[in-house]
Length: 300
Image 1: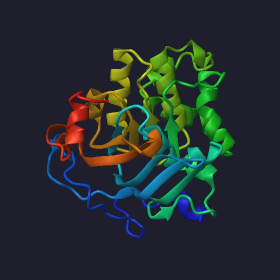
Image 2 (image 1 turned 45 degrees about the horizontal axis):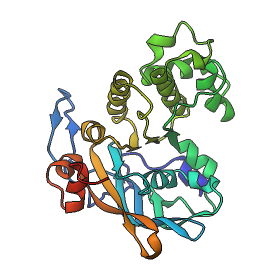
Image 3 (image 1 turned 180 degrees about the vertical axis):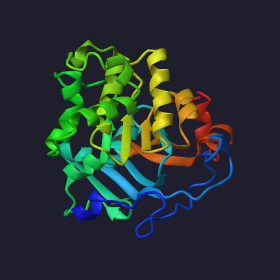
């Protein structure tokens, strides 16, 4: 089971790859000119969520989520505070396993593989599906050792210099730090620290990158750098982000899922998925009036 997880089908693969019917028109770069085309293209599905629910003890945080996350696209999760966006995101790499009393029901498949099958190693899941958190969290080490940490844990001892340079280059940070790799990571600015954390994630060669409000603690200039980086990485990685910034979701994502809360008897609030669609359509012509109300600021 873990062998299947270690080498999932890549985009366009045969066995195990699926095409999501809910995935409509996407923006595909032209192979020659790099121009953006609106021609619909088939897109493989990385995650399939079916009737997914998350509970903390007996309390439901989010219920009944049906969602297909397409490969090599940016999918944004938006919604009011407390609706379960981050909880849902953490399901995708089993981070909720680390929370006492948390349990997941329903089906969550990664390239058709049940991520919550007891035979699946959650550590391997988190290597394949990396995560960048809301607040930059560099290790108390040098810039170099932050990037080399993951490969070393995975037993890599050769070509570390090349791995570090590639990860920092992919995170658009190499030119800024190449002359101070042995300096403390804490000497970097907030935006640089966040890109360092992205580079640390890239160094272990994940398939998917999860980002939980990666720009919420950053200034507009640093936010712009991270957004540009996400768009560049989208060509090679599947990215799922949680954001409260409607403009950010509209700028960088290809697909958007709107999640909101229902108030149950007794006053408990439970998150559920209202609508999932191509970002342009969801923001300009949403199917549900609740989505329109949220993105226009009438509630939330």
